[in-house]
Structures are given as structure tokens and as C-alpha cells.
Length: 101
Image (cartoon, rainbow, N blue to C red; front, top):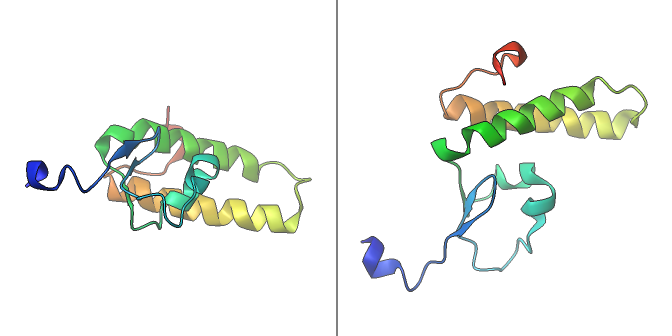
């Protein structure tokens, strides 16, 4: 099957997902805001990306500790924490910050 579709589906490796987007729609927004890829139907997140998502989760927790980023930014970070926690759960990982590298 992979051989049959290999000429039609382009798989791009980013540091955080495998992307099968054909350049329509995304315009590489996920390269800047990685959590945009969580809900994207063109991204594939597998075990090879665990360490990256653990790091993203830890960074979001650090952002939550900053008090002067404003209410809107705090809300965005909270949404990101929830999204990334979901990814880690899907990958069979806990989201206990002490368990993260």
C-alpha cells in the first residue's frame, strides 16, 4: 500500500509531527505554533515524537508560572497544556511534570 500511494502522498518530517498536508490550508503554521498540529487531520504524532512533546509540555508549564503575560496569553497556555497532555496520554505517557525529563 505504501508503495502504491507514495507518489500521491508526501510525508514531511518536522521535529514534532509527520505532516501529510499538501500545502493547502496550513501554510506551515504548525512550525511556529506546534500545538496547532494537535487537532490537524494532516498530522501524525507517533512514539518517535514523545520526547519533543514532553519538552513542549514542560515549556507550557513554565509559561503558566509567568504572572505578567496577561489573561489572554494565560488562557492560550492553559489550552496548550490540555492539548499536549492529551497527546502525551495518547502516547501512553503521564503528564506529571516531575516525571518529565
